Figure 1 (cartoon, rainbow, N blue to C red):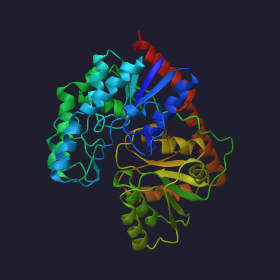
Figure 2 (cartoon, rainbow, N blue to C red; figure 1 turned 90 degrees about the horizontal axis):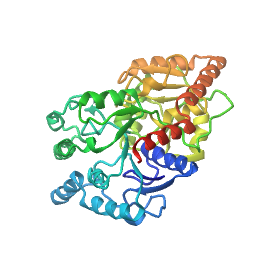
Figure 3 (cartoon, rainbow, N blue to C red; figure 1 turned 120 degrees about the vertical axis):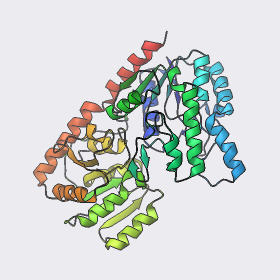
Length: 409
C-alpha cells in the first residue's frame, strides 16, 4: 500500500512530528511505501517529495498590514498547496492519505484535492483545532470551551489568539471556512489519541465523520528500560510557555518543603519570565535551566530524574514527554487536564494535580519527595507496565493497517 503522510512541519518540532515520522518508520517496516507532503524548511528531514512541498509560511513573525492580509488569505485556503498536492498525487498515486496537522499553513485545500481524487483520508487529531480556533482550549491562561458549539465570537472578544484582535479574527475566519466547506465531513475517519478529545469533537457536532480512540505509540527509537532505579531531581521538559503550566511549577516549587533540585529542559517565550521567577523566589541554586535537548542527551537527563512533571494548563492530548518518561521507569506528576488523567493512575505510576494550583502541586512535590526508594521503584515499575499496555508500537501499526484496509478498495 502507498501511504501519503501529511503534516505542516517536516522536521522534529513536537509531538505531532514525533508521531508523523514514527508512523512512517512503522509503515515502512511493514512493507508499505510512504510518501510525504509538507512545508519547505531548512530544518526538514530530506525526502524525495520535497520539490512538491509548499513555501514556508510563518504566522508568528512580525508583519505589516499588507503582509498580514496576504498571510491571512493563505491561511484560509492555500492555492499553492492545492496545486502542489495535485501534482504529487498525479505522480505518486497514493492509496490512502493520513493527515496530521494540516490547518493554517497547508489548509483545507489539501482535503479538497484528496476528496476530488477519491483518495481515502484518515486524520489524527493531535490538538483541538477542529473545535477551537486557537487549538488550545485556552484563553487568558485558563481553560475555555466557549467555541465548542460553533459560536466563535468569544474568540474575537477575548483576543484568544496571541492576545491579538487581528490574529483572533483570522483564526475565527479559518474556523468558519472549515465549517462552511464541511471540510471535516470529507475525511473518512478521525483518530483521537485521548477519550477527552474524542468527546469534545463529538459534542461540537462540527462533523459527522466518526472518531475512534487510538492512543499514541512509542516510536521504535524509544526503548523501554529493564532497570528501575530512582533518580535525584525533579524534571520538566517541553516548551517553556504559559499553556504548559511552567509558572505554576516554579511557584509550587517555591512553596514546597524539600531541597531536591528542579531541572527544566526546553525553550520558549517565557524563558525570561521563568528566570525572573528564579530570582524573585531566590531559587537560583536549586533550579537549573538546561535549554533545548533531544536524542540520547535528553534520554539520559530523563533517566536521572526522580520524577517528571507536566503541570499543563491547556488540554493536552497524549503527550510524548509523559509516555517517554514512563518508558524509562519515571513516576510522573501531571495536571487534571485533557487526556493526561487517562495516562496516569493516581498513586500507582504518579500523581494528578489540580491545574493552575501551585499549592496542590507543591503538596504533590513534597509527597513524591517523601517516598522511599522502594516506593519509587514500585511506581517506576507501574510506569513501565502502563506504557507497555497503552503505547505498544506493533499493536498500533496493526490497528492502523486494519483502518486503512477499511477504506482502500
